[in-house]
Image (cartoon, rainbow, N blue to C red; front, side, top):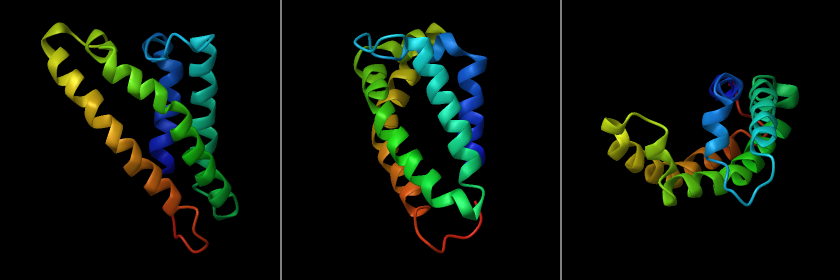
Length: 122
């Protein structure tokens, strides 16, 4: 799980405009939020790799997933997902944005599992 979040966090720095596009308009400074969430994903992703910081980092991931959920809802309901891909893939992007919403719950449960005392390696 840790490597997934590190990769996702790095992606925020490689394509900040794309990530900023899915920040709902009511939130200020979308690019700053993208960088902040990218840093959080990298730090928390690394944190779950180590037993000493795993539990706190997993709780941080749960909080982060809840915090970014409005962006996922916005991406699905405002058609933003279709704007982020070539036109021929717009339909698939719309479906993926809707599938992402319940997947967020699965990701939260996965991170919550890592909050346990005796979870093995990442």
